[in-house]
Amino acid sequence: MNQPIKFYSTGDEYGEFSNFATYPIRIGNRIWPTSEHYFQAMKFKDKKDQEQIRKANSPMLAARMGRDRKRTLRKDWESAKVNVMHEALVAKFTQHEELRELLLGTGDAKIIEHTANDGYWGDGGDGRGKNMLGRLLVELRETLRSQTTEGSLDSGE
Image 1 (cartoon, rainbow, N blue to C red):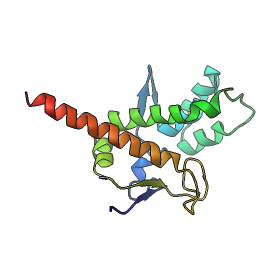
Image 2: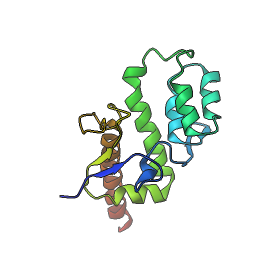
Image 3: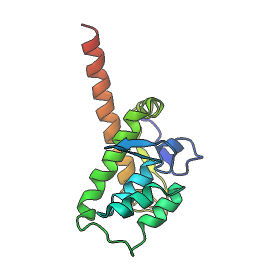
């Protein structure tokens, strides 16, 4: 069994998996500096709020702005957030070939966002968190793998 892959900081091994890693993504007709910028901006219905977060000069600032409750949170945010994160990850790992290869290169290893700062997206630091970000990455890896397999079968005909 492969050792689990733990990531958190962009400077760590597999730091590219962090939403703070600077891999711009295009969703719709807009470019977002990082998946963190997109995720945080999508918490709000107001286009002005979204645009201010998109223009934040760092993912840390985007995260801070996204946690600012002076802005009005979408009413459906709790039910929408996993889909929003999934959308950001799909964009990130399909628009950057090197990231796609890195993710596919993890084999069947469990992927864990290892941090005491987050018990929902991460493992809570002690493994008791939900690790939703890691789970979404594993799910995306499977999707990309099946597309790669299907693609190689098609191109051989």
